Length: 70
Image 1 (tube, rainbow, N blue to C red):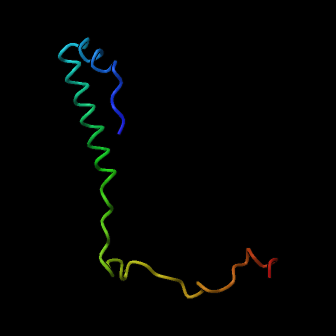
Image 2 (cartoon, rainbow, N blue to C red):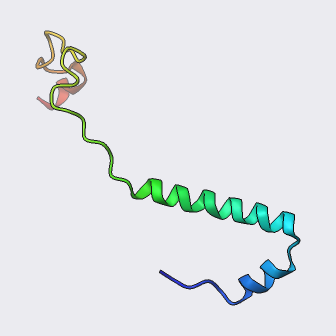
């Protein structure tokens, strides 16, 4: 991880208390987003989509769009 530029503390000290609080809130928001992106996606339990997907009877039939390639 890289270190913060030297100018950050100087800028921080020039901010009034209210703006420091806004900056801190925004930094916490960015940190939380970063941590959310690190979380692994939940694995779905086997069979959770059973009955939710259907295939038509003609699923394996040739498509008319590809007639010229046969």
